[in-house]
Image 1: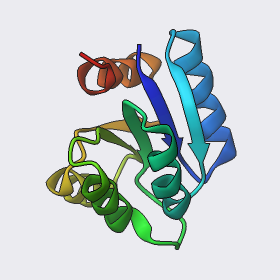
Image 2: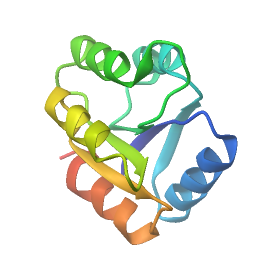
Image 3: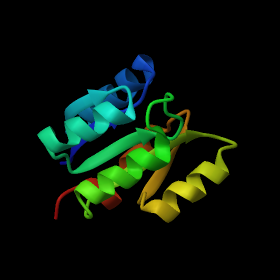
Image 4: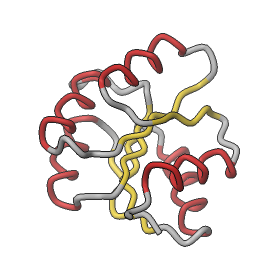
Length: 122
């Protein structure tokens, strides 16, 4: 099972994702609300997968957070979560190095499929 860090500024979304992951045997190693905190926490917990909201508060932003995570660890596995209608951001994040995305509102099976494909250790 995967060790996951959740990055989302909405506490309710973090709770929904956390509950789903825990219910299916995954470990939530950290929950953070912004990109700055994500980078610092990543170094501390070294998760198998980062689930990151595509819309970040105005700290360092989505692109910079994703780029910094990949500089810190070029094998970091990051999946973005987004609402419908954010295709441009999804495309940009995939070009930078995101390995997948999950559309909100989450379908539990879709989120778990992404984790199985990219987040579980070999």
